[in-house]
Amino acid sequence: KQREAASGVGKQGTVLGVVFPCMANILGVLLFLRMPWIVGKAGVLASFCLVGCGCMCTFLTALSLSAVATNGKVAGGGAYFLISRSLGPSLGAGVGLCFYFANSIGAAMYIIGTVEAWEVAQPNAQLMTAGDINNIRVTGYVILAFCIAAVAGGMRYVVRLGTTFLFIVFGVILSMYIGCFTGPTSFSDINLPDLAVGISAEVDALRGSGWRSQYKGLSMENLRENWSPNYDATQHAYPGDTIQYDFVQFLALWFPACTGIMAGANRSADLADAKASIPKGTLFAQLSTSIVYLSFTVIYGMAASRPLLLHDRFFAASSAWPHPAIVIYG
Image (cartoon, rainbow, N blue to C red; front, side):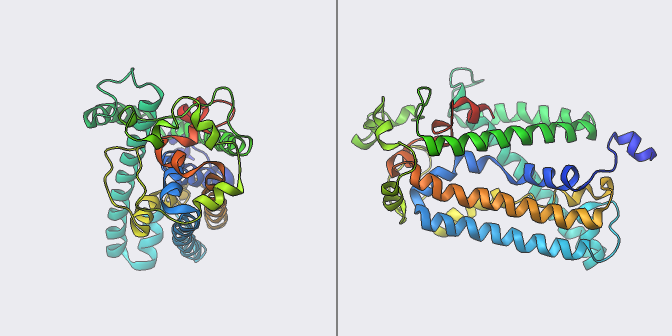
């Protein structure tokens, strides 16, 4: 009780202690910034398969985590405690170190994604030139300083902010679903990089209101056009990305979006019944987010033409209902 009072976090149930933290960590920037672009390049079928591969890997990991969590008493220490109890302290420490580095790299990815969205939202309000690598670095350090301050403020604030932000993400995803079904609104607009102006007739056809003819809501015609991959298709959403992608590289690009299932287990000390909450909450969060991911591979393939998916750098916002700002700032 003294520890709980000091941290400001009481014993939590399955939903607040496991489901919400896991979903908040799994649902990330790749869904909003790269999913439409991946569908445009890899096609609906390949995108569904590579997203399914990533989800299947984390599902099997969630099953293993559930087996370990239900095989005895779960104390504080989260993933390290579970792994060290099963494999021994030496292997547990090694895996825990890898887990730490993975979380650090994941945080960097989310910070960079935040900067990219901010550049789209306010290109004229940047610390440096929008699109410049140094602007990403400097703005990223500012965001990192804010994150450090939030964590230093105490666990109680992290828990409250995490739950609040998760419901914001739920609202953003709902806006994306509705927008893809209903088509563009009077506020909808395309996000073409300045470098793409005049670069090809295909891109110029999307400027102004021309893109609306290629985005009218769900269409079987779009699904047929986007069904097969076209890895050699020219894309201008990210002019600096000259990588020749294939299925495996897209799988590597997407896989970080499937991670985050350990967030609930890492709060084992704060759970009222960790042995029951970790398996139920982790599996529910993993399966529900997998459904969201897999559904968007099909929905984006039906919602827009391939050129629009390849050249709009933020189609998730362009297609949002009722206003792109919901996704950009959410």
